[in-house]
Length: 85
Image 1 (cartoon, rainbow, N blue to C red):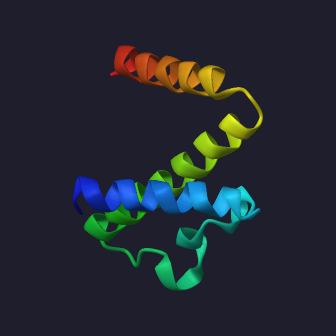
Image 2 (image 1 turned 120 degrees about the horizontal axis):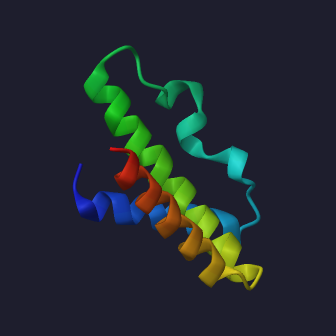
């Protein structure tokens, strides 16, 4: 998967939020898109799921006026994970 594909998926998540879809309506949660036991497929699915969710959450945060807080939380989580590694 390319970075362009991930960006497209993030944009799709943001558009979904604009259209009023809920976070649990992530299309990567649909049964036909779930991975089937292959570790490579699981990684690809997780990246797509997370990209859509990221786009949805970023748009949601911007609509509620908390975009700065949202990104600070993401940075904090990334820093904690780096320290745990």
